[in-house]
Image (tube, rainbow over all chains, first blue to last red; front, side, top):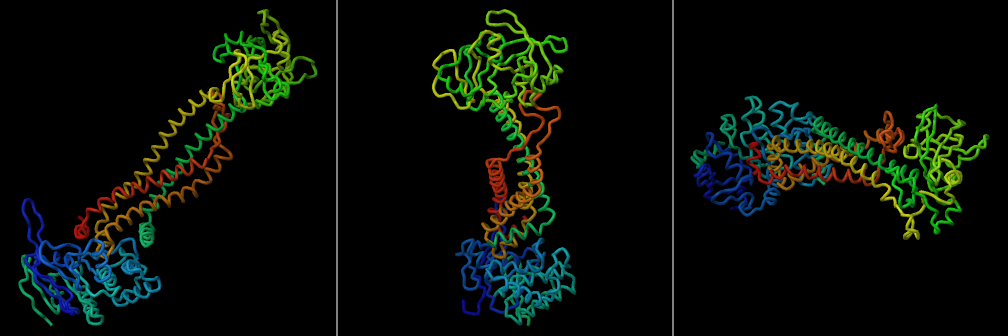
Length: 231
Length: 390
């Protein structure tokens, strides 16, 4: 794994027990993602996109094979170490935004910084900066239920980006958004990728997202069918 | 520290849900303290009244034949004072009481009574015996209670014919003057009783230097020299009262338990609902780097902080009630003393450190426990399942 490689999987297999047998979600995935990439895992439902994303994000474990993220072999991490790894280096964006409903926009974006032990002054500056990036600083005091879908997803992006992680994992980030909001979100993420050098990995089957990708990895039945650079 | 901050944020952010929980808990807390304090106050008043008014702080010496529940024993229950108390009797440090049965005829109707002779200067019982002094008529002065006065229609200054049997069994009679009517919550010193100077009763009964019982200011050390006298300590004398209090406490504890269960149910219900309804939130917290143990801690803390807020709210909301009940008390229509309890018409709440700290500690410890119990399920939750809300 050279210095530019952020993610490296080798012979990655993930099986889930189903009844008396197993369902193989990932079947021998070999993937390398370098720093600064804007890469999408595409494929139909059930192809293993989200499973791969979860394993890369240390939210799930592989049945076989190795996964290295930021130079760490995820199989060797304990629960608290994996949590620390996520907290320090990764950002997550979810299809349903997953904003904490009782927090304001500011507090939602501030949350990852609290876990990192940043001071109040640092947190305030970083949160406002992140909200500026996604163009939603004027909603800082709003609660999630007062936001549209597009605004909610922008808050989720700000929350994922506020600590300037090296890697952001986005699971179907535009699936709940209309075309206009989808493009706005993707433009925002692409800008962050270009300006901050943050690596983005998407799981998506949304054509709109695919058109933005710099690299498209197609998964079918848990295996990589194609891996093409698009830009 | 961060968990406290997050838990506080969650509670405040949850708004109405939090405040409803806090209100239910606070009301339960207030009612628990109130209910228990009334029973405690009742017990205190009962013990206080019985000890100070009826028995004396040091217990009593009884004639061995004396049984307050058997009037037939009174006839023979009299003996000369025990020698070892001669000094204390001389200084009126004890109350020497001679009890005889008698009859009065208020408004022309015959009524059986207890005539109790007592040394007017006694210091052992909280009775206004110093009022039993010879009045203008020169007749034997008599003290009665308000209930006795109400029942017989007697008023201060009235003359009353009293008939009794002397030591030889001969009937005799004389007039007495009601010199004072006392207010007391202890009906056993009031109803059907008439108090006169013991010297007069000893003379009337031909029982010079004799008594039926002696109320003491301090516990009697050792055993009386004469076997005719038996020492009854406060444990013995208050045994019936203790049983009454135990029965009242049992009822109070049932109410305490019900309120306690309601309070805990509110917390438990909220926690269980939280675990089911906030799985996606838990998954998000884990994805952002909170360990499973910290998620459990966060949810437990949230539940526990409900309890802390409730205690605060309970003290603020309950203080006026607590104060009113301690100062003005709770008025019982008709009076509890009519039911055989020496309480008068008002029960004052009593708040001991044990009640306040005990209730607070018990409730808080249990709130923490029921807050934590449902969160154990989180330990089996994987981040991916949680994110899917499963």
